[in-house]
Length: 232
Picture 1 (tube, rainbow, N blue to C red):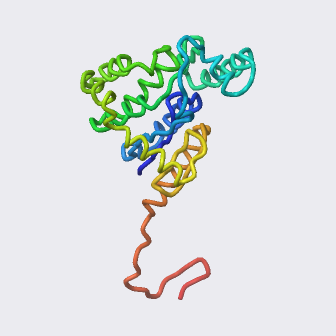
Picture 2: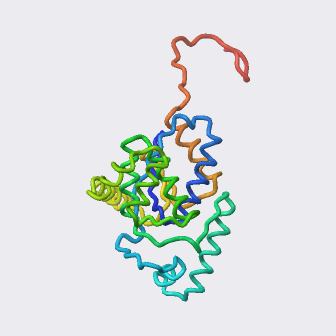
Picture 3: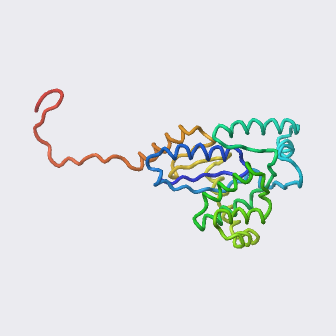
């Protein structure tokens, strides 16, 4: 089974949704046969970080509300994240344009480490307050999961995987993705949002059952027999 997941590293519900999906997948009997592919999606592709600006101020500006209201929204999200074991720290979060981070995920994918890179970037942004605008930071995060830091930095500086990010985003437009996280199962079913783990579990079971139907035996001979209403 193939599961494609569109998400953005700076989407708080995307990290929560990742955990909820993982909880369901961990209980799925055929989890070893599930292939996960992370797809790029930028919530604000034109975002230009302002040095020293807090995430509270940045969010307030984006939403057109006061900074105190931006902080309140962050506090609400922190409580939601706690429910799946994530300790968001918005006071340390550095607003970022994620184009480079998405390129790094594609760099890692070509070396079989896409999932690990996605998780590391989420943690770096939401839990640790690392600057995902920085090439040095991104290269260091790549090294932490066993990738070559110099090669990662060179690929990001050259924009080697920029077209792959754009291709994911174009594909999202074609299939009608309007918000993330967005999950597509075997190119057949879609689930939008950080749904409860129970929903993901139901979808996994449904998609698997449809792809692996129990075969009906082919009748080769039909003769006299007895049934609930009697014998022939």
